[in-house]
Image 1 (cartoon, helix red, strand yellow):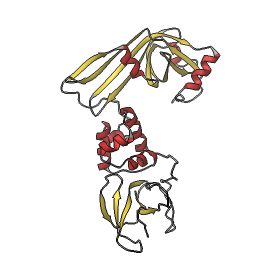
Image 2 (spheres, helix red, strand yellow):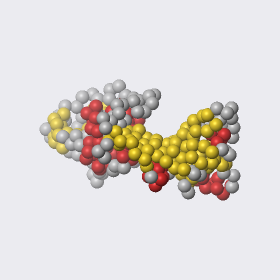
Image 3 (cartoon, helix red, strand yellow):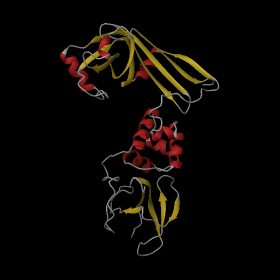
Length: 304
C-alpha cells in the first residue's frame, strides 16, 4: 500500500464489505508512501495515526478532483468493493436512507445535521448516498441530532407499532387550527381511511394519498376495501409519532368520497402523483375525498 497526501483511506466491514469508516490522509511518515499514515476521519474530523489492516484500502485522489470522491486504488491491483460505486452514482444503504428521511422530516440541511452530529458534511453525504456501516458512536450522535433513536436508524423497530416509549412527564394536548392541519397533511404520504366495508362492518385501511386542490385523493382498484368509500361519508386520518421526544400529532378529515372519472383529471392526478401505491398491482381508480371538516391535535411538553 502506497499513499499520497489527500488520498482517502477506507475501512470496510469484514462481514459485509460495506464502508465502516473513511478519512483523508493528511500525513505521511515514509517518503515512499507506505504506512503508517496520519488520517483525518470524516465522521469525527479528528486526526489519528493509522496502521492499515487487511480491511483497509485506498482511493487515490487525481489532480483537480475534489477530496472525498472515491476512485479505485490504482497503486495496488485488487478487487474494488461493490459497496463503493463510482462517484455520482447514489446507492444508499438502509441506514443512509433512514438518515436522509429523518433529516428531511426534521427540515434540516446536511450542513446543519453534520454540525449537530459533530461530523464532516462530506461524510454525512457519503453515508446517505452509499452503503456505509457507521460506528455506534456515529449513530448515537446522528440519532441525537435528528431527534430519533439508534434503533430507529437501524430499522430495529420495523415490526413494532409506534409509540412504545414513555409518555411525557407533563404533556399538553392542544387542538390544531384548520391551517395547521392542512400544513401537516402536506402534499402526500400514507394515511388511513375509516369506512363501512362491503359486509357492513367498519374497516380502517392504509393508502398512499395525495393532496390536490384541498382534496385528498388516492389510487385503488375496483372491488377493493378502499374503493368501498365511494358514495359514502368517510374519515381519513394521518399522524406522526416522535418516539425520541414522546410527542406527536394527528389530523382527521371527514367528508364524502367520490370516484374521479373525467379523463383529463385522471391523467393529471396520475402525472402529478409522487409515488405509486406501495401495495402494488393494478390500481388505476382514483378516489377523491373533499373534507367537510378538518381537525387535529398535537401532544407537546406543557411548557411549550
